[in-house]
Image 1 (tube, rainbow, N blue to C red):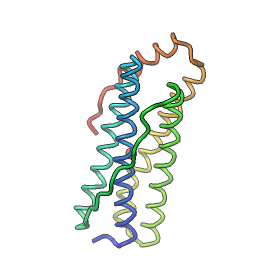
Image 2 (cartoon, protein in one colour):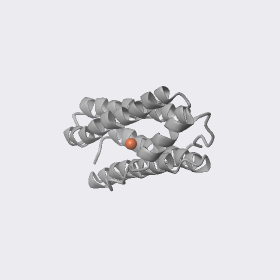
Image 3 (tube, rainbow, N blue to C red):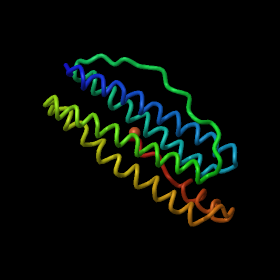
Image 4 (cartoon, rainbow, N blue to C red):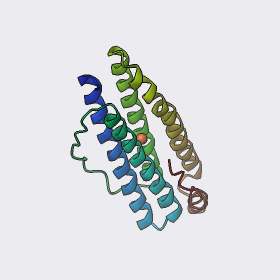
Length: 166
Ligand SMILES: [Fe+2]
C-alpha cells in the first residue's frame, strides 16, 4: 500500500494526465476545423500518449494495492488564437506537468518510497522529451511567423508522426 501523501499525489497526477489528454484532443479538433489535418494528427497522437500516461499511473496504483479515486476533468480550452498559440499553450502545459511529477518525486523521497521513485524515473525522462518536442515546434512556428506556406509545410511534416503505441 502506498503512503497517504504519495497516494494523494498520484491520484492528482492521474487527473492531470487525463486533463492533458483532453486538452490535446481539443487542440486536435481545433486543427481539424482549421483544415490542418497533419497538426490534428500530431495532437491526436499526443492525446493517445497522455491517455497511456494516465493509464500507467492507474495501473501502478493497482499494483501497489491502492485505491484510484477519479475526479472530474476540468473544462479544457476549445478555441485558440493561432497555430503558434496552441503550441505555446502545449509547451507551457508540459512544463506544468513536469513540475507536478517532480513534486511527486519530492514526496516519494520524503516518504522513503523507493518503488515510487523508481517508477517515476520513466516519467521524468519522458517529460524531457515532451518539453523538447513542444519547444522545437514553438521555435519553428516563430520562424514561420504566420506564413501560410510554412504552416502548410509543418502540417505536412507533423502529419507523418505515427502512433508509438506506448
Ligand atoms: Fe503526460
